[in-house]
Image (tube, rainbow, N blue to C red; front, side):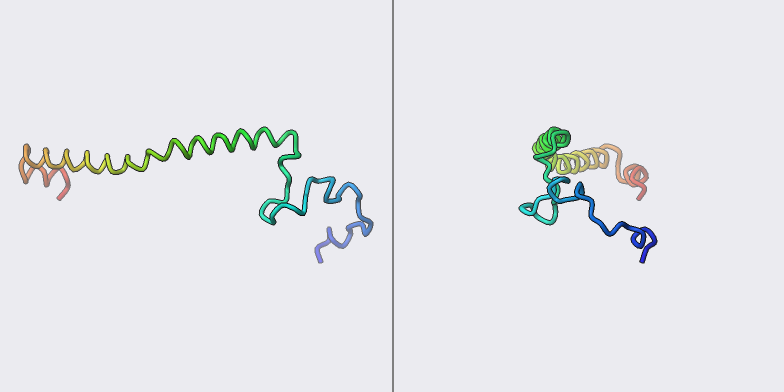
Length: 95
């Protein structure tokens, strides 16, 4: 047994009760802390949730960016090959 646990007081501290530290049995095991009852933490978590929701909405259109980049790269490759010729193209592309 760890030395700290051996010297732990056998008497329970009443300030460590479930009610005193905002733990509730109605919450899932994943989140036992009741954030809604914490006056300091609740506004921060609400603001964080709003930011995350906004970021999720903003990133929805980013899925198309990779496709646009690929199409742009293909267009540049095609023009470079046609205008510069096969040897120059291969040299530039490291082929």
